[in-house]
Length: 119
Image (cartoon, rainbow, N blue to C red; front, side):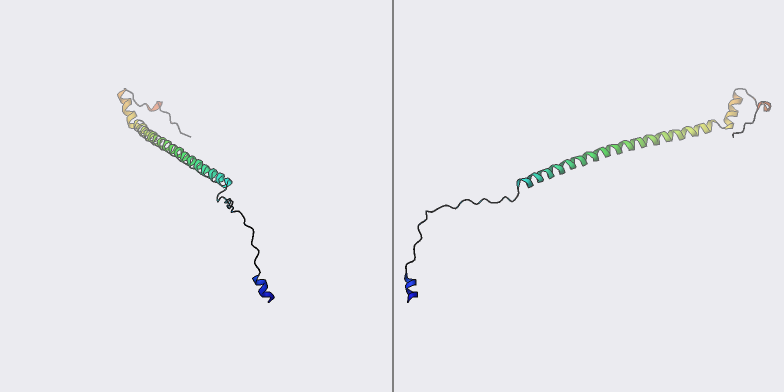
């Protein structure tokens, strides 16, 4: 019976609380300001490196073009030197020298010829 009396006792009512709006909950940012700064620094560094690489490639290509031009000039000079060596060999042949000497009226005097050895 005591149990029934206990159950039948009126429950004390809670005092009425005025209706309050919930305070806005600050949400934690997914990306912090420091991470944004690091990301911006990373992007700027990548952009700088890309520009530097492109500039270096351009300079390398310019130097390659200069090297090719110099090689062409060297080949041209080598060909000219080879042609001139051939002309020297043709013009300094004994037959040609003998013919020129005859045209100028010179004769071969063996008493005036000295043998020189190239040592």
